[in-house]
Length: 183
Ligand code: ATP
Ligand code: MG
Image 1 (tube, rainbow, N blue to C red):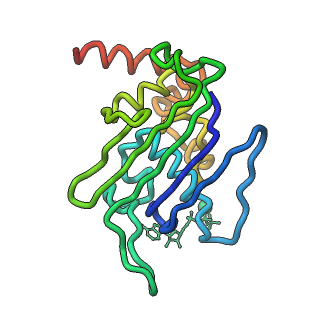
Image 2 (image 1 turned 135 degrees about the horizontal axis):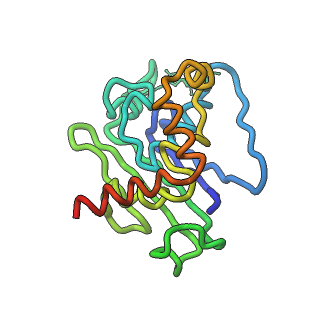
């Protein structure tokens, strides 16, 4: 499973449509303070189903919508799309017939978020489950926020255990058990 493309529109400081092609290997994002580097990582986390506004450095989820600037008015929607190359078939078996997976999340003021997988409307949970066993997703320890290293050092044992469970690849099992109990 490889991320190949990230498209943003109206998400935080990315008011104009922005299309990032992610090539093989290491990608670096450089730029001056406040140019939107962290916003890009948050867009990635958000489209994978993040539900905590605090993880987006906001008070409410609508804070991810472009809030306006001196010469631009605020937007009513934000949208992020993520393209995944599944030619290695590492996505759950339900996706075995597709080489390309496209996830889209859109938020509208006073309405909330809607998700699409391959153009079809799905629940947040469906998007989160796509990543449950892939050591990725919105809560993946592979996504390290600014300042998170010092938080880790000061973490309580239970929080450290969650990180170890993620690293061991067993947190997907908990999510699947929870999902099964709901059915
Ligand atoms: P640093 O190098 O300091 O870490 P950065 O490149 O990571 O900076 P970000 O934190 O991604 O920068 O971007 C911050 C910018 O995004 C700020 O200018 C802030 O005003 C802007 N921003 C955040 N949310 C919104 C929003 N909802 N609408 C408009 N602009 C926003
Ligand atoms: Mg930053």
